[in-house]
Length: 197
Image (tube, rainbow, N blue to C red):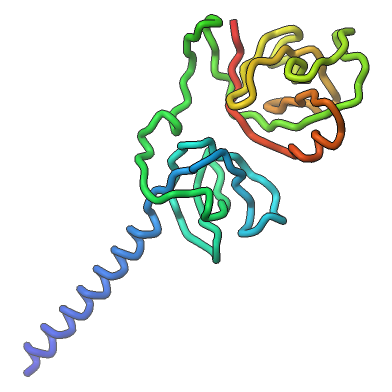
């Protein structure tokens, strides 16, 4: 009788362990971004953006809250609205790798890191003395990205450092746009940045 009871307990415990393993495996599944999308600090649009997923980027799902999936991406943990994700994908894709350098038709590009992007408008003259232009002018920390250097911002294009500002320090770039309404609509983004040589 005791042996039979012991066997039943072992089967029950094994079942619990297997169930826990399956549940943990389901939570640790990968998801893929179907478009470029913000990753927020909490499960809702009211939370600040902590990073951005690129279209096709594969990340680990670590949980969920309602219609939001908790993910770990670009060294940050946050939430993405479910409709912008699809199940599956391999984290060994190029989207998760950061090249130290690459070559393109415009010459070599040196990877500088993942930068915080902000947006500004209204200036008539930059720190370089030039008139700022949309889709061309950026402000940067010139101790890292020298004045007049060409910078490729993934998902945005190639820009020229023609401005700087007191708040533009470290891995941050301020992109010149047509007006303040557009600057406010864009808010804060994150993108990989390359110095073009």
